Length: 358
Image 1 (cartoon, rainbow, N blue to C red):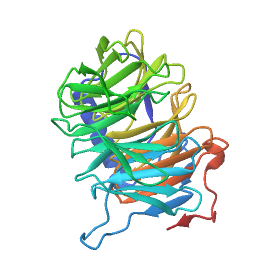
Image 2: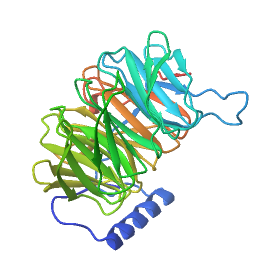
Image 3: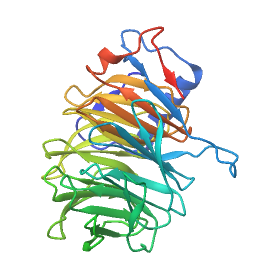
């Protein structure tokens, strides 16, 4: 079904519901793409890594958080088995298993020094890991509620954490010193992102609003309505002038940072958007409850490729733009590594192409 674009105005929920229903029927019946419409090329993963089933579990763990290192040599995964795994992307081997969390892990991010990893989740604590030894070097103070989102400033000097409360707490990640506490627009924050300036912080959650803060001064800047339902993901453009956000209303919205004005909306049907990553200066990847990953060109507002293979919600995405490597984690209990070198269309898999699976 062709992707649609809106460049102005808000869509009432009833219209979105009807559009979602129609799209679902089309997919369920396997109807062909309408005449004249061009389907985007499809890409299969270069490597599929399956989470192991522990002796005390009947099923493998879901993957709810992924991260990729600055040199693209390592990927981190975490999920509902409370463990954090560090993978070597070149051969799919597990380099470290980090133990210390006592509940579901929701967020993971590599520190820019490439020596540390930060994780957090339902046990309400941010944990800092030494990647060389696999040791936990610090556990920050326990939060009152679940931590759902982490964001690191580009220089690695500030980590922001938020979750099922209005408070957004800022720390120095390697010392654990608390810097500031900000107040969100709702008591359910699902996503955080730093602007390239390392100072402006964006937060989104249940009320569909995006709040902007000066993380250094510890003060609010502005907030604006962006979505009709919960925001799950948001991220700044490379120049810091635009924000891309998406979530439960099945819409990918591009907004101006300075005033919140809508630049455009891409309608992502028929599933909620749960993950987002920049894959180039004007290209993003989104994943969601329809089990697909879509690559979008923001200048043309078109879907340029579709990454297929997951058979569960794509809960997490991370991309190393310089290396053209995208990693995805899913409720289907796999980590998938995608090669985007040469552009999305050029990497569409050809019949008979080799696919590694572990």
